[in-house]
Image 1 (cartoon, chains in turn purple, yellow):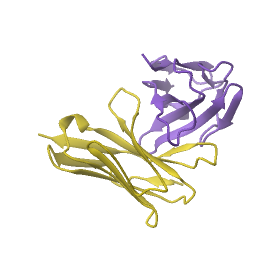
Image 2: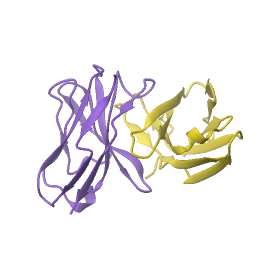
Image 3: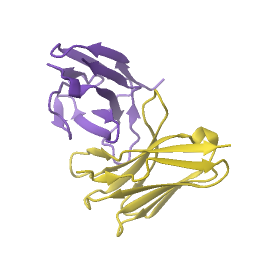
Image 4: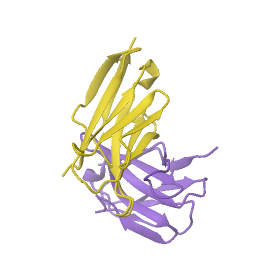
Length: 114
Length: 113
């Protein structure tokens, strides 16, 4: 089954404790990206990757890091989480860019930073 | 600066009637527009898209209309069904600018029996 898998689905952590949210896709997609969803703001792109070893900033990259060492994986790293990073996070992948190809989203990771 | 706007946070429609969801954008560089549907506790799923060179795209019960001069697009669902109840996000992309997807804030559609 074609899918994007995020882990964990739920996470509560403390300020400053490094964490990683994993994202994996099994569709051999080139393009992957991370979004956060906040009330009244919709989904905002954090980082994206056009292919292996190619990553770039989205609209809200501050406080986040990503890596793309393999095509299937695109982890999101919070080196020193803060309460304003409490949000619902989605990973997405598509065969190419998102213009005219369907993007597949993971089920989301709800992160709470206290 | 919200480049893609969905001014109606919610919409309620009776089953069988037409649902019309609206979206406005400000960036004239956008050349592809997409609609995504999201159920609670799930990720968004792609619904339909339209290129800026077209003014209409249809897929079954879903039709998207684009008015470039007004920088406005709309999603029509006919007939509406209870299973269509979800949050609908409008999104836009400038394919020459790194394929960054810019989302609106979403409209909660409720289709009532």
